[in-house]
Length: 314
Image (cartoon, rainbow, N blue to C red; front, side, top):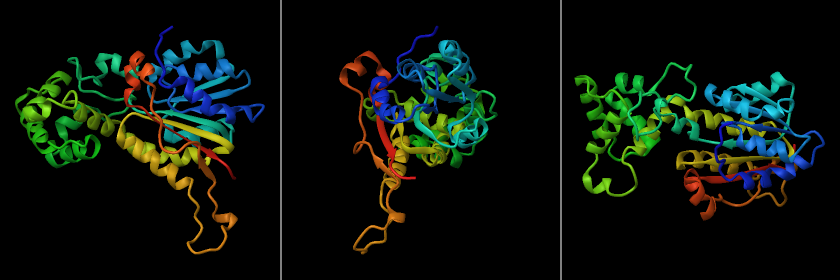
C-alpha cells in the first residue's frame, strides 16, 4: 500500500460530518480521489457512507483501488474529470449527494513520478498531462504555440511578469534543439529572469511550470464548470469543501461561493422574497489555512486555502 499525507484531512472530515450524519445513507463525491486518503478516512469513520471517487489520472486510480480495496462495496471509482460530476451521478442514478470534496491542483503522486514532467527538479519529458490519454502535452505547447500564445499562457495562468522574454527564449531554444526536457526548461526560465528577481519567491520556474500544467489540463475552465455543476447536485444541508493551492483556483472558488450565498432580491424591496433568497450559506467566512504543525509535517499544506459552503434551500 502506498502511503501519503492528505492535506487538512481532519478539518475536511469535520466540515463534511454534519452533511453526512443528516442522512441514513449518505453519498459523498470525492471529486479528486488521488491515492484515496480523504476517502479512506471518511469510509472508516462513517460505516453507512457511499463514496463516488473521480480522478483523471489512471495511475492514481490503480493505486487508490489497492488502498481502498477493503471498502470496495461502498466506493465506486471512476476515471473522469470533476466537471463530469453530473454525468457520473446520472449514470449511477444519484440525483443529489450529501457532500462533495475537491483537492485541487497537482497531486503528490504526480510530483513524485519524475517522468510525468510536473517537477522542475529533475530532467524529465515535457509532459504534464494528468490524464496521459489526452493528446495535449507541455511538449506540444512548447514546440507549436506562437509567441503570442505562449505569452497568453504564461501571463494568464502563471502571472509571469517576464512572459515575453521567456516566450522569446522558448522559441529560440526550440529552433536550435536545446529545449528537450523539464531541466532544460527550468534553466531557460532562470536565465530569462533578472538575477535580482530570482533571489526572491522560490524557484523562478515555478510560475512557468504552473502555467503550462494549467494549459495542458484545462484546469481553470474545468473548475469553472465543476463548481456550479457540483453545487447544483448538493442536497439540502449538503456541503461542498474545496482545497485550492494557488490563487487562480482560489479566486474561482471564492467567486462562485460568494455568488451562490448572496440574495438575488432586487435592491429597494422592504422584505426579501423567498424566490430570490440565497440557497447556500458559507460555512465560515473567507478561507482557512493549514496549521503550522501540519505544514511542518507536510510541505504541500503550506499553500492550501480551504473553503466550504452548505445548501440551505432547494
